[in-house]
Image 1 (tube, one colour):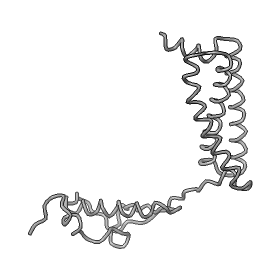
Image 2 (spheres, helix red, strand yellow; image 1 turned 60 degrees about the horizontal axis):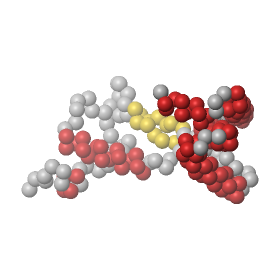
Image 3 (cartoon, helix red, strand yellow; image 1 turned 120 degrees about the vertical axis):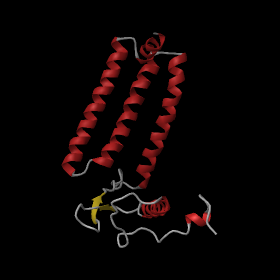
Length: 186
C-alpha cells in the first residue's frame, strides 16, 4: 500500500538521519522522496546542534567524494555585570524596562502637551535608550580588552554628543516635540 503525499507514513519511512558518516556529495538533483528525508534530517540536526558553541559546517570539496568539516567559532557574551552579582544586573534590566515604558508614555505626552520639560525628558530618555542598546551590541560583538575599552569610550562620546546636541536643539530652536509636529504637518 503506497503512502499518500504528506501523510505520516511517508514522512517516517525515510532513511536514518543524515550525518557526516553517511553523507556524500551528489552531482545531480535528488528525487523528491529523498529530498524530503534529507530536509527533515538537516532540520533535526540543526535543532539539536543549536546549543553548541562551535558549530560544524560540512563543505563539499570539488575533487572528493566525501565532504570535509570546518568549524565556525561562536563567541559567548560575557555578562555585563558578572563581577558585581546578579542584583546589579537585575536592577539594570528593570531600569531598561522602566525606561521603555517611560518612552511609551512620553510619546502621547509630547503630542498633547509639548513643553520644555517633555523636550528635555525626551532628550535624556532617547539618549539613555540608545546608549544602553548600543552597549548591548558592543557587549555581544566586540571582543578583546583593548577593543572593548575603545568601543566603550566611543559609545560614551557618542552618547555625550547626542545628549548635548538634543539639549542645544531644545534650548536654541523649537524643541523636539514641536520639530516632530512640524515634520508631520507638511
